[in-house]
Length: 583
Image (cartoon, rainbow, N blue to C red; front, side, top):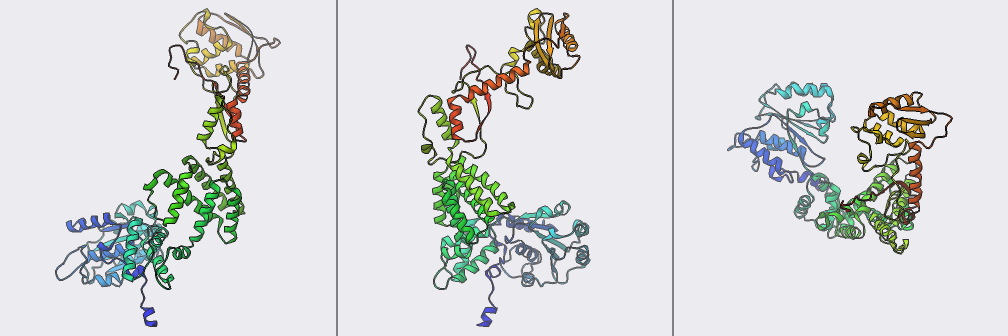
């Protein structure tokens, strides 16, 4: 019995591919290698990259076998490895003297590289090529890479290099440019599931189809991880087959179902249930950051189900997929995208917070509160009905089944004609406020090419002409510092506001004479009582416009729907000119 146990070989090693035909999910790479070997266009260096467990090291050994393939009938490189060649067994067992394997993660220095390269100049002992396989090459030091470059650029005819890495971005481009690169893909879920089913059949093991889906999901495209998990799962079955429940429990996915309960509770606004479930999971040992990560996964799955329907292509167990699709039917796309953003923020907050549980609870509460607010679509319908004089819809009716409208500080914009009283377009704003859009300004501004006594009727006309002449400094000074006392053709009297330039009158007089060709007398009288500056007039009109908008039924309804919201901007809807399309 002890001898049998000592001879046991784990599935990941037992079912390691022995030929290129055994490689699953890498058809493009195999096809390229076959063409290269059949035409004799064999590179001197190969770079294999991909995530863990997709077959980088195995592929490197297969390439080494193909380079040194030799049988009684075949005397040259070949990718047809069905018949074992003279050197195949030793190469696959990593004991062939002409195939040197080095783990760059443990031998990273320049001395290790020099020791390796010293042997490159020697001819192979028995095989056709000396093949150097360097795993995790991205771990080499900068000096080691530099030592490799010259040999890699002009290697001896008998030397071949095969590199493998999981971090291709860390490999210098000078090395990459000297290699033929192959990106090994993650194995597709359906391909990996079929492979596991075949292994189970060979091992005489029975595993539920849903259980295989759970293994495939946990493996994340890695064949080695999938076989290791399957190996562990087969041990779980004392009698009969392996059930999905046993695999879920083995992988720690029983709590994953509970995190979906938490996701549903938060999404539907059930605060008490959501907080109770989060606390229960925490008491059972769940990590708050992991819970947030699971919630992100659930949100992603539900959003994909909402967007793609039956084409979403889930690989989870049937019961989980059913819950995801049911949740997707009840949630809106806008709600799900908002929840995703909130969970992303919550994940970082939970990871950095001194009390992760408190941060997670606050995040769950934000999502639950947002779920009680109407969605933008519902809010638009409610506001449209109220502004048209319809009876207000009770918030209880609107909140039930509606998606989150977004928490925090909301902002609304009102337009006259939709419930807000029409008001003149404000002509100025405070310096720190965004400048409102002024429609048809070009029509109202005096032309820079017209002269005549009727050109200027007010200080506003003068400011508009300064803008048309692109004299923005003068325009700003006129708007901020000129309090008009009297305005006549050829003569302006004004009271200078605090901070006015001393030479403003002279500058304005010279500009007016240049524009009209006539002399203008511009006098500053500090003792006179002038009117408002253009800037003050605009600010006053803006305040009045905001006050009018705040009395609008539509705006009142919006402020009721989103507590804490404020009016950010008010825009006046221009009346169409006669003959203009009102649409």
